Image 1 (spheres, rainbow, N blue to C red):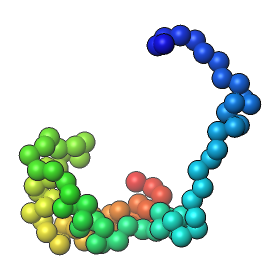
Image 2: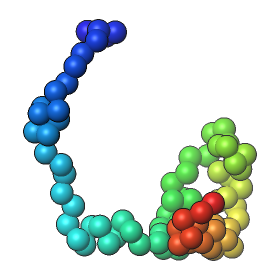
Image 3: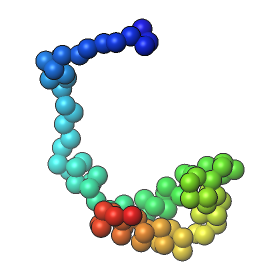
Amino acid sequence: MLNVDTTVSEEVLQQIPSPTVDDKELSRQDAVPTLDEIVKAIGQIKNKKAPGKDDIPAELLKEGGHYVAEWLHEIIRDVWEQEVM
């Protein structure tokens, strides 16, 4: 039923269990992405798609090879550690 006002009681919301994540997974998620992860992510980008907000086509990132991956890793690491873009 779309566009119908509904109310949910606080009691019902409290009954929804929160997912738990073990310490090992938390530390993995908090770690700076590695250069290998960046290289893998670049390799998984689809070709011949419209560029994103950065206006950089996937083919350009892929053709840049290890140099571009290192450059991206440095930028990502700085943003990750400083928490500022």
